[in-house]
Image (cartoon, rainbow, N blue to C red):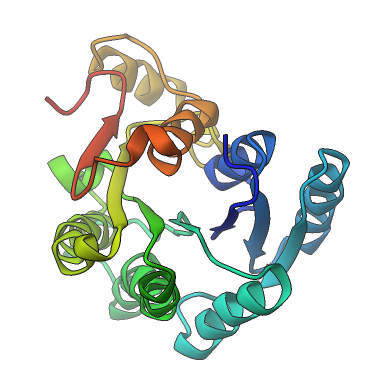
Length: 246
């Protein structure tokens, strides 16, 4: 259980981020719901978490902006007392073949999906070092392990997260802080709902389990790494992909 712990979940107003926030709240953690546009859903989640007896806070921040990420972490510390768990989940896609991809589309995905992770980590690590404990869990992707046609920007960012995870684990492990990554496969979210049925069947066929995952599958993995069960695990990439990348 995570009673008394405070978790920041970026991109938590929908999809995988929402499922993660719900799971951690159910385990007793205080939750900061980070969002960029979906204020109504973020506020709704805060009220839901408060009925569970946990403290909750919705904070708008574009984590690709260094100062906004700093405000997100500082407000968490000021209002909830600590940052014990950081889940770097926020991400976007702007797909296209390399030969047609614009510089803007490449840069924006890197800014959000990779630099955004750095920004949040940069402002959180000093707090965790001072308290000599913490859990950092970065959401990467099977695309960062295998690559994916049409997603050079996304795959590069997610591969970069893996490198950052392993490096940071070595830098701060002696301070009692674990750093791990979770690599989801294809998960049933608004993003995958837009895929053509034929493509969905192809994806299912490429997994050992023959099906898409659910956001709750990722949330369960995060809870495992965030709790006492994950205390001796660091620098690892846990694939939750139904048997796609092995």
